[in-house]
Image (cartoon, rainbow, N blue to C red; front, side, top):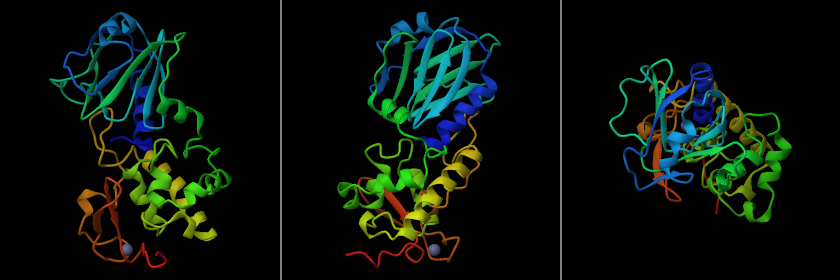
Length: 280
Ligand SMILES: [Zn+2]
């Protein structure tokens, strides 16, 4: 699933490649999918989208938001966005296929679930996750500073949570999910199960720096290598803590990387670099 570094990468690539192009043909909902969400029904999409030009794109949390000349187009995580021919042949199954005026195609297809929203500029559009992501500062911007980050961790109800729950659930930091979190915590030498209330000032500072630097580095390198970009290529950021690294030596100390289930997902840790000693 894409997170903030990948939504920003896709948006940057759309700005580089698609801006200025005109949509000449539209297929929406060609491959029915139980968990594909549209704004209204896909039947209207051809009329809404045809003859629009790509104006600009940006990453908003887990979303890629595309401004077209007459409508907005918004893709959530779980939607594979590809430009063809660079990304190879058009996939057999797709939930949105746009033909462009240079005879190339843009496809959007789902893995498990995802939103493909299209609405006119003057039309109201509501989506809870999108609204929250628009309102809260992105960790990739200067507005997300140490004071803001400390403020996120200070409420009593957050203090009682694990770091994974505090940072990567409930839209606490839109665009930050369990995937990116693993490397952030490893770099900060903090365990995902650590209770937020046990953090020292120095640890909060280290966590803040790691969160900002790791996400910025992931975005700079075109996303994580575990995800694919607009051209179907893996991102350039080599993820340290992921499924493929289970049992591999920790790059810092050589201890085998440990995988365990926690809060409905897998966490990957180094038991030496990220001790849980101070805990209960
Ligand atoms: Zn280690």
